[in-house]
Length: 479
Image: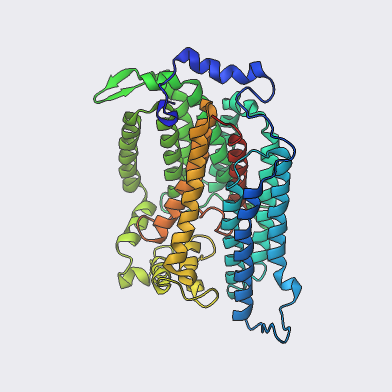
């Protein structure tokens, strides 16, 4: 990966030797940094975890005051301790994850967990704020449970991937797992209907527990792409036949990639998830460019995607209605139309952004619940209304910092598979944030992609914490 590492592209024989190095060196591989001394402690991570601690404490205290709780330090009138249960629960979970990482990965990146913890604290606080107004008093508690489960799986992921060969050496197993998740999604979609929206949400058990197969599918897809592209990196870099201005590798090299990408994009046809399709294509292009350093691939596939978008727009009335809502959102006939052909949600979301001003109306003082589905699709609008433009910039800054750390992990890696997987996993989180924020701001049609760590929902939170766990493991490699 010449462009990422700053060194000349190695030959095919050199790449294969690099990929096989761990098999010669032992279980951990010659590329892994030796475990540091037992006295080493993750002090930077511990200090950064103070940020979500302070934010959660101040935010929950503000919310209690807004809801009528009297606080008088002189008279020792304080809220009951159980009112701070969400704060205590989240901080204990983050500290437990921090302590576990000191034992199983003391030399891993020390900023990923605090960033994810800060974003998760925003999600828990917003769920606590919005739940009572929506008649769902347990919403904050459920979100906290999802975060705790996600942190447990994050640590387990770091522990289980001490040897990455079982991820790298079985690409078609991950492809099969991804195909199975796609099959579940398509079966649940209930057939082809170009006029109706759908979500890839499954209900499990009598309690109505929901699960989104696409969240885990994205991880399987990244592992498959990383393994396959790393194995065929030299062929992809050299190219092959010319198709007009484009130079493409042999068909047999691209076929597995296109088959998997085609199965993924089938979700657009049967489940009508336009945002998921854009996310998958974006991740695929990012990894393909990172593995080949050829912009012609991106342009070629971008042209195909543009052509496919025209076809989708022509065939699917649902796609046309989403674009129409975007362009005619302020038309009274559209605004007062019947859902899902109403722009009421879009306009109310924009009003929420605008009413927040620069510094917001104050936590607990706004009216974000005027926006339909505010806990999931429009959680950014709710946050912006109460924390203002400054708060929204801080939220975007957290995502930018997370993307920076992920790409830095990729740049410092010497193993092609590790580089590509770090790029793909980082792109999943970054592109999700871009797509949903653009939808909230009326820059593109609104999609069902959740805002990572912040939007309410268990599937997304768990999948994103697994991604953080994989990035933590990948960060242990040093150049």
